[in-house]
Length: 564
Image 1 (spheres, helix red, strand yellow):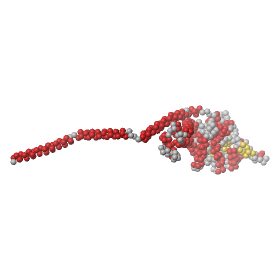
Image 2 (image 1 turned 90 degrees about the vertical axis):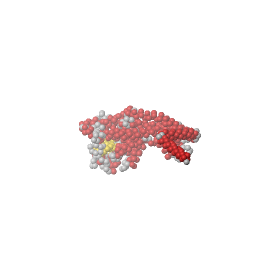
Image 3 (image 1 turned 90 degrees about the horizontal axis):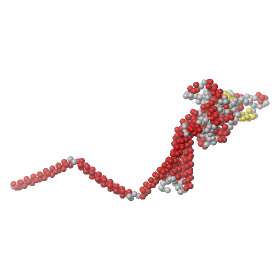
């Protein structure tokens, strides 16, 4: 029994010890785990990194294995892209080399523009005109434009109309025309009750006794070299027909005899436009028209400083034949010589035709321009160029049309603005751009084996380059020193020249940038043709032209590359 109890006690104690030991071991493990978290994280991170490195090595090995087996088409494509890039770079480099001396030459023209303008030889006649203009301007304020028109009308054997309110020196300007007449001057003020005898002379009593209806014309309009008629639109029907014949045909019917009238120029003045239709024909006889306004507020001080004595002295100097530079002989034959020796370029002709279309079709109300007026305007431009010492009518001469092609005074500024805008646009050479686009299309469609066609395309590209280079140099010369061609123009007043230069200078600068860009594109095409560059490379070099070629070309010519 005692042995049995002892045995049970030992068994219980052993079980308790084992249980206690197991519990202690679990607690120790638990404490050990909670007391070392950092070490466990590092071990995990290290294992992950090793795993990633192993994957990377595996991928690298796979990539190397793949590259060694890359398809041939990919290799060829890479090589082709490299060749295209090389060709594109070569063309661009060559274009830069060719463009640099051209632009430097244009800059040289610009920097020497003022010197070139002053070195230009001016004829003896143009110098006389400058001196005469300066003398005619003495004692007048803000009438430099009217003085120039007065002389220009005389050289053209045309007539000048001065239109404006009373007290604006219209009569004074007209009287100064007598400076180069040497006594053959006629002046009259018309009223609604004026009779023909006031202009054409009284009837001859001796002639009436002989049953002849003739007038004593000596000292009257039929024998005058120059004339000034104030309030000319007061002319009545009894005067009108004979006056029209004198103004246009330079003829006068005296009895049964038709005589030639030596009239060089007649200046008409009026405070108002003609009111009746019967005066429209008389109005159209005045090729040059000028609206005479009051002196501006900025120049009013200069006007007030003028004394009557200074005006009298100026008039005396003008009438002094020794001081006045122009003689009656200087006006003889100028119109005929100008028409024979002066040429009118197509740009001027196109401008005039487009201007008339604009005035008659797009203006409201329409501005009527008769065929006779347009023909006489061309002659006027010839005379303006000839007397300015030039043999070719300049585009800038067309600014004078602002004094020719208007019916109402406010329309003069409209004509001038249109001409200025057109002059700036003409410098953009749109036609050359169209030709270049067409040439690009032909180059893309051409057969690479056709040597003759390739040579022709290259020749045309070089021709366009020469045109653009010339245009760029001309534009550079025109803008040098603030458009010097305007400043030295004998028939444009300083105020007119300054206004035109201020308007044209920014337009010309913009046009020059467009010309330079167009020239660069032309050189690109020329170099591409020289190097026989493939069309797909030209498409990268000139993307805008390629896009236009794709849009406008026939479908068989613009298939995507690779399908032909």
